[in-house]
Image (cartoon, rainbow, N blue to C red; front, side):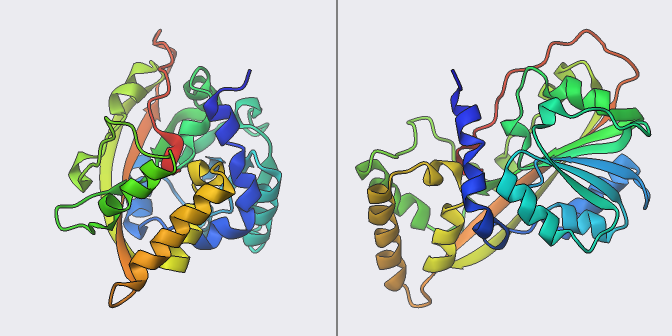
Length: 283
């Protein structure tokens, strides 16, 4: 029987048309750090896990890398092909990363996942990445998350009673991290026994949203996609009403990302693949 991860990870295909515009761009500095930490050079061959519509692919293609993208969703893969058509060194394969075969020409210099790693089967994901990398290659993982600086917008706490009213509230132990409190998974990566020299870098930034733009963003989150229409109508109506009362009609959402870059170990060190530890609800 499919688990929640397996069920939720296929929901994004239904919003392929909105994903590219609604999801935020990653900071340029993140790509600069990634390239430096992984020792990448223009022309290196990269494999992207779950490219969606190409949000993270385009900046790396612009930097001269050859990229093979693996995307589970049929509609997302089609959107990625359209968005990436101008890059002859980029190809998009539709299918599951878990089924990805090694490249005939040898391993990749980098296997990376941008807000996608937590959707991959935790029993095989590190082993599969290790198999696809060349000796000395790197694994890179990062994901966006909602962070709450001390001077952040109070809107997100004020709207929570509406989520609770529609039975979509957060669990009692829900953590609202400041930018410097975002979890990192360096121990998990090292614990796989397949990667070493794990480097971690943190990034945060702010985006202002109108009601329409914010609702478009929410419609790309798996838990909101799976939400019943009546619940969405109630929630989105309240978001519109509350933002209409603000002088500028906007909210401020702070984003955070933790970049992990790790080098492929020379051989299997006997580590056991760790269990999933990320929450897919906001991704």
